Image 1 (spheres, rainbow, N blue to C red):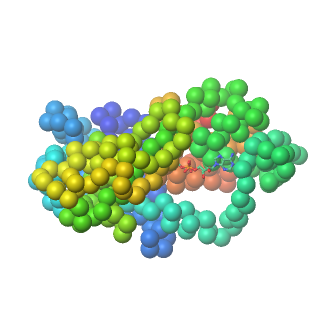
Image 2 (cartoon, protein in one colour; image 1 turned 45 degrees about the horizontal axis):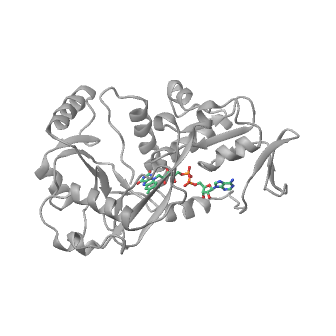
Image 3 (spheres, rainbow, N blue to C red; image 1 turned 90 degrees about the vertical axis):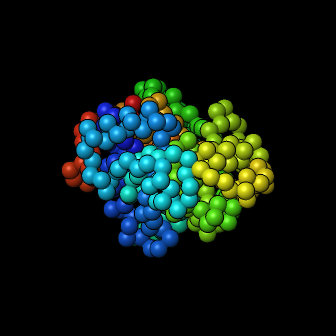
Length: 325
Ligand SMILES: Cc1cc2nc3c(=O)[nH]c(=O)nc-3n(C[C@H](O)[C@H](O)[C@H](O)COP(=O)(O)OP(=O)(O)OC[C@H]3O[C@@H](n4cnc5c(N)ncnc54)[C@H](O)[C@@H]3O)c2cc1C
């Protein structure tokens, strides 16, 4: 799911996520069906009445256009989702549903992209650029510009290449495991018509079921799906729903399909993107945490603009905030 953030002080995260979602839509909407985002909207439920009232004030102050974000009561939220929901909240008309597998496949098929499978252990200077090597020391690639976009894996590559010391924020990057669960759509009367977010999220049926997410497992040694995690995702989904769903209530945690993976998290949950000051030609695009879809298109364009000497698609203060350090 790709849903922008709103914040009372319109902070950096909110501004970045707004720029990121607009860029993602612009970049990806012309991709083939299945790979392109499905703009289905997001109903983001508020935790309680107090938060709803505070949010109303925020939306009034920030004066966003209604088609971008507007407040909705419980009845409107339920009508948008096509299912009874627990509370009202805000509706983002441009909330997007994506199939990461199809999106990635489609982007990799772009002209000029060559895929060379391999696990990178180190990068080192080579002539005017950089050499990329595996653990056995074999050179996998050599180029004037190298961009590490391997999430938490970048920390080890930088450390083993002797490049991490001047980067205290990156040294604090950690990996946070989590899982999502596929709920049969018939257990949810066909599932919601739009993304439903709040404490967790529930997504429209993508053919294989409705994704219910997600868990946050600190200190995990592996990312895996299981009964414990499915109890959490199903409980979170139940907390978003209002009314009764007997088929959903009778689902057995641990019996459902799902997906587990890792998030690469940096302090402040903002990514690190840009050229390494101490290593010209070596770039980073990592630390996307829980919002890879919100950041990736914008960060790709930010790097491309810098490399091509074009105007930045991002305000200077935001670009500085996420520069690797
Ligand atoms: C349960 C869960 C639910 C999520 N839900 C959402 C959501 O709804 N919306 C959203 O926007 N985001 C979501 N996220 C977050 C999203 O998955 C990440 O933000 C995103 O995957 C980050 O993209 P990335 O390419 O930076 O890293 P990754 O997707 O982690 O990809 C990094 C790749 O680099 C490879 N790699 C690592 N080290 C090396 C190396 N040394 N050499 C070669 N390759 C290497 C890895 O194998 C991997 O393929 C979720 C995450 C989890 C865990």
